[in-house]
Image 1 (cartoon, helix red, strand yellow):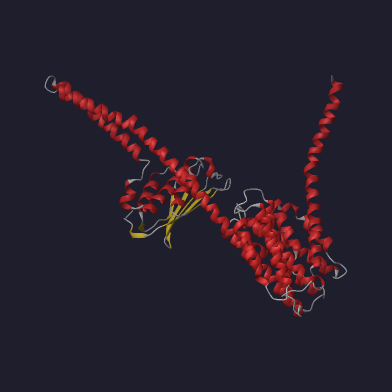
Image 2: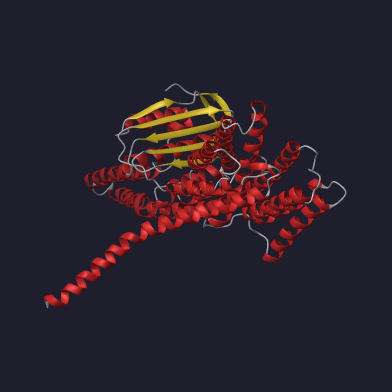
Length: 520
């Protein structure tokens, strides 16, 4: 038996060793693949140069690098180093300048990827205008690094004169920024899994859109009459009907044809000065890309809001039905039964009053007990509704009362000094109460900080705790119901809850100031 077990053990060891090597092999393959993609896109960039290594209209490798690190992870940065070393033109540059460029290019990609990951947390950068704006900031800041380091490296290597540094820096930065602006949104839209928001057209319509973009671009850049911005209606069509995917693909098609025609054919951006030609083309590409992406982000944002509102209406109706049935059940089985028993006892007391006064007295005492129990049950039911102090004295007093009774210390950093409309106050109270309940029951918090202020016609509620974090709206903690409440009145709701870093519940509720709040 032991002889038969030896080969099995050896086979198991071999299989385990192979499994342990598999992640390393996949990592090496990914790094090599990134290097080849970077190198290939660099060759495309060189094909679009006007003169030398610093007059490219766009530098596509920066977009490839940022996309890869953002989608796959920052650990693949060695592929950027390898790809840039392969792409460098050592015959045209001193060795020190070439290595300086590589350092700047790698640092650029890493900086932009880190900023993009930090500025856009959760969701896609193309989902709304705010996230898109933060993505543009990350790309603009990251590409500044390469333009600055590269220009300095060229100046120190004697490739350019001191007076040329500002022009080279501008061309370099716009080229890198344009390359990132074309490639990064395209990669995020097409390679990130998930629902394709904003996609409402058919495949045939999609083909027609791409054909229209290509045809109008060629008409604008190959015709005798300047028709530069004729392609914009097609870009708008793509963004409105196909969201981020349609916008990014259309921008890529328009940008590719624009760059090819400008560098090989001519067109409206061909001037005697190479600097002017490059600048005009880069600005045209940036304006076209930002316009199409912004419109697609607006369409996506509106569609998501519309679908969330539709879903929240359904949940609110269902929640209302559940609450109504609960109240009916509680009233039927509790207070109603006691009040029925009370009526019976009072009727018997009335019948027995003349015949046996002592027994009537007993029945009246029992009826008194039933009344007290019925009142207590009705009070228990009312606790799920708005407290009287909220309607009588206002939100600040209601919050103070809850904080006074809380078993977890609550710091009231700020409370409104004026009353607002009842809908805003009740919504804010439920957000506060639910956040406090979650912090006490589920987060095991030791302290809670509450800030409620009125700013510019909005009631802003911010509740933070130092609990375990990890709260999820879909986990049945009442957060989805809070979002429904807030968004139903036109407000905004968000939850930040990283594991072991506490939870922050934030709501912004439209309101109108009515009168000074009552004393607390």
